[in-house]
Image (cartoon, rainbow, N blue to C red; front, side, top):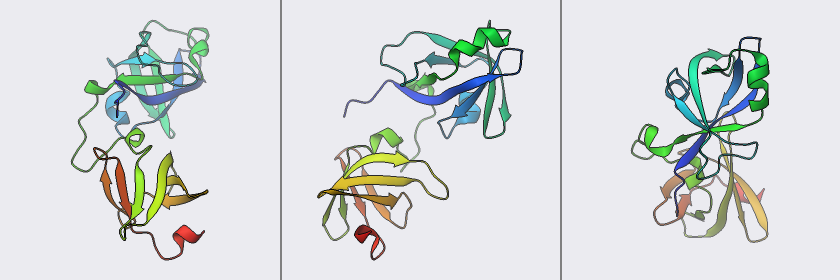
Length: 177
């Protein structure tokens, strides 16, 4: 798998107030590190962050706000300056992110994994990851149907990104839904 060099870390949702702040939905588990003064983010468009994108957004100040962050970009001191950024995504160079711990994966690495049960039955391929509470869900497509499987340790027993496979042990009846 060809790994992207820039990973999406947030969505610039909307301008906030009159002093050049944006409300950002964090799309990372490491938001405290990513959204802090001095960080330089790659600015994408409304679809994501393309490889090779060079437009940058430097953070002058940031603070937690509700379920996201209020970020003030450097050199943008009023609402009119930041409003055109609303709706765009921001990314960060992969090497600037904290290294993954043992057993951790980026969600984009799950897409395309071949899924089978612990008994060796083929279930399908991971098509989407939905971030929900209380557990994230994997959409697994195969054999003319899709399954929603919780991404929890009791169900997902093995993730082998290198070999493109995942082993699940679903509760009785889950794959019949």
